[in-house]
Amino acid sequence: MIIDFHVHYYPKEMHKDPQAFLTRHKMEVLLEIMPKEVWQNVLKPFDFYSEYMEKYGIDKAVIFGMSNTPEGCKEMNNAVCRVTEGHPDRFIGFGYIPLSNPEEALEEFDRVVKDLGFKGIKIYQRIHGLRYDSPRLRPIFEKACELNVPVLMHSTQLIDADRPDAQNPALLLRSGLLEDFPGLKLVLAHMGGGLVYFKDFYYSVNQYNQNKDKSYSSLFKNLYFDTSPPNWGKAMIRAAVEIVGDSNLLFGTDYPYTTARALSNILESNMPEESKKRILGGNAARLLNI
Image 1 (tube, rainbow, N blue to C red):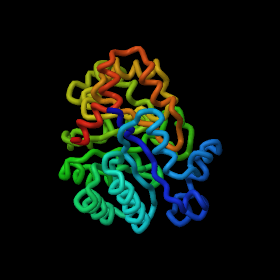
Image 2: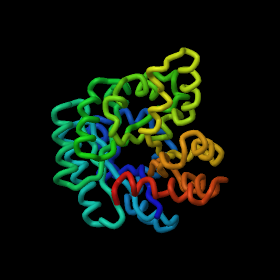
Image 3: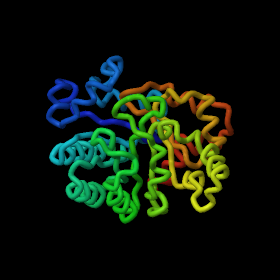
Image 4: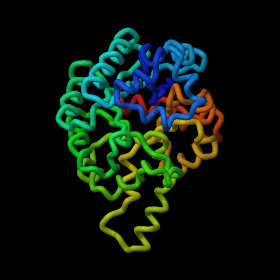
């Protein structure tokens, strides 16, 4: 089974008038950070992704909407629910919650899991200006543990460190959040921005600093990483397997922003077939209890 763990859903309104849609949902920042060449995919109807699944043999996909307002989050989550209810064998709903409104975020988290039957949530803390070690993430992680569902978290690429809105995913390791919530199922999108490759580095740093009480590298066992976008080539996928193992990697495309290369990077990588099966769907099925 192949499960795409990272698929964006945009309704018809977005396809008709992106500017109006993003303005209403207070996500105009996407117009600035989204490369122009991806708009041709963004503006395609979501049915195009179903054709994509058929063409490349993808069995299921985790889908989620996005909004920066409490009302918009409910609207997008309801829209995603209509898709999952119409195709329960194909699409798995994840909720999107308004991090800028902590109380409403927790209420919506409860609603999407308990009432809509979603399997987890997606958070995009960068849009809200939140660091990876923000105290405002604590109640979200606590709720995720309570409901026993995964959190898919946007990860800024480490190579973007010179950007004014850039954030360092490594802040998670020293935030105390992972130690306080050892049962948290946290998926860092986009290979954690490259964090996946630093496990051994953090181990050596701890040894050098004689920091025996806190091993950052040990925290990696609680982290999952999705392989979107396809910039992570075959050699990098294989290196990630060697560093963190094949049980903590999840295939993802970041559709509609990427292409089928995200899948071929795994299928054509020089690794055992069992590892490919785990990454392509086995790990996701275990994480989602499906």
